[in-house]
Length: 207
Image 1 (cartoon, one colour):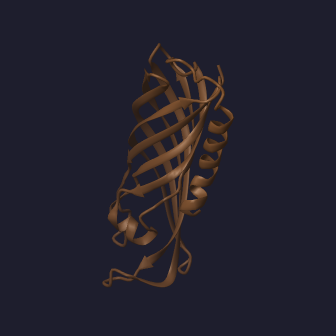
Image 2 (cartoon, one colour; image 1 turned 90 degrees about the vertical axis):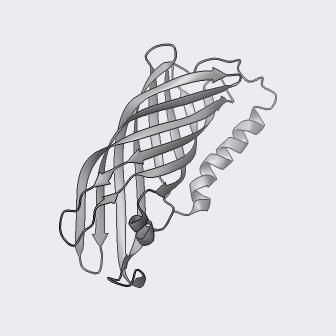
C-alpha cells in the first residue's frame, strides 16, 4: 500500500461529506453518540530504528474502533488494527541491503481502553489510553524461515471529530503504541514494534 492509496478513501470521503453538508448547519456542541464505530486509515512511523532500516520509515495501518459511553464524558473503546510491510534483509556487517533477501512482516492488534471526550464548539476533542494485544509474523522468503509471536503493549491516543450529518463525523487521530519484543535467539535482536500513527477516518453514531 502506498502513501497515496492510504489516504485516498478518507480524503475522498471527507471531501464528499463536507460538500454535501454545506447547506446543513453543523450540530451545536454536544458529546458524541452513546455507541459509535469508526473506520481509519493513515500513515505510521515505526518506533524502532533497526525496523525502519529493513522495512522503511512508513507503515500504512488500517483500523476500526468502537466507542461506548459509560458516563457523560467517559468512554470505553475496543478496536482492531492491521499492518503489513515488505522489506529487505540487511547484510551482516554492511548495514545495507543486497536486494536479494526479501522479508515480509504483518501484525494484527486487538486493543481496548478508555477515552475522555470534551466538546469544543462544533468539535469534540478526545484523549485516552489502553492496551493492545498483538500477533506478529515475519517471513524470510529466501531462507524459508519465519518468526512469530504475541505480545501485549501500551498505547495512548488523542484526536478530534467534527459532525457533518446527524450520525456521521469526520475524525483525525494520533496514536502511540509501545510494544517491546525480546530476542528469541542469538541471531535476533530486541526490538520495539510500537509506532506513531496519524490517521483519518469516518465515525458513525449507532445510538
